Image (cartoon, rainbow, N blue to C red; front, side, top):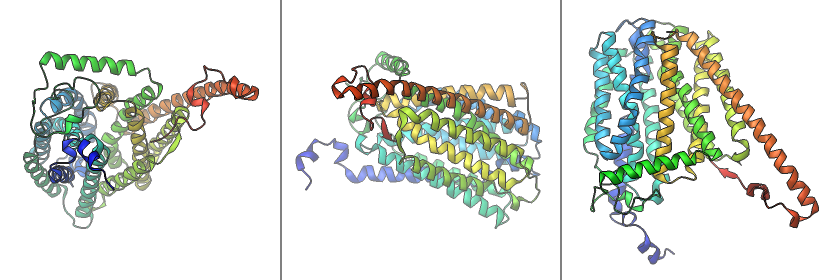
Length: 482
């Protein structure tokens, strides 16, 4: 039987008004689902290369696409800070306005400059995703974070899947042109803008709008309150001091092996992953050029990769191994697998084989994402966790920008899509070699530490050396569920 005293100890947000936060979470999830319904998104590249816009492949690859990476890097930090300072809703409105701008430019723009501006707004929408993913934390109590975050993430994945399937059905079965599909997308993103206007603006956020006395880096139970109290969170100097202190704390935490390893994976592998995503549609158009829009299957492939990614993420949650020992090996094997898939995608002339390799590539990356999140977040407060992921994403974006300037931009090497994918293959191969060498080093160190333990145990349990690490004293220690 539930204890009334326990209920009395719960934060107010967990007891009253109960129906209100449920309604807000449902609306946020519905909003997250609807804003992903953009059936023309999977077909933007063939639309630009086709008769509707008639841009050359060199223009799309070396002039238009690089702007996405540059704009994302330029707006990432300002949007990250403004999301917290303005308390989420204004940034979500900005994201919706940017989505509307993207499809207006796709429909009305005819010049390379207009398409570059379209890619700039695309970068803004990508940077603004942080507003949606963190908004949920202002609606519910800390005890509900994990479950509610999974709901909001599932709503987004379901929206992406529905959008991709809808687009593919319209093109293949309905014979809908890419131009018409973009008009449909404009209608959906306009509806998403209307939905954004009805989102409630929270009174609290992680860094700038905190309750009094919440200056400590630990997670505050007050962050979820939607009304009442002071929304200033202290003076400007206090804010700056808090952020500076948290940045110094993040620097100190960089010495933790697992945090460092998975943060480096996030930086290096995410950079290569997103570069592949940006240019793979151009690769498909090169492998399988067709004037029959009904035989372009980008939407179906995106839907399949979304489903596999969701399943891989779910499966990763049930992996129970000793991550302190096996992390480098798991990352190395997956990265080597991805390198092989990139080579296959770039050398095959069979479009279905290329599609399959793409789906497997995305699924393997999504398999490691929840593991990385768990390994990074397990020893951090909510505020520090947000800051660490923000820093990791920033460095990944910087690396991605450098690679784009050197490899893709016409002011650099200006490589066409096939040579680019050879570069990405070499990049992932190099990463795999480094990870596997690190795994060998970890195994050797573990073996060297294990020998003194076995000798001590042979002499008797009382002779176990005091300096033996804690995880060596218990075979089960270090085995965590990601």
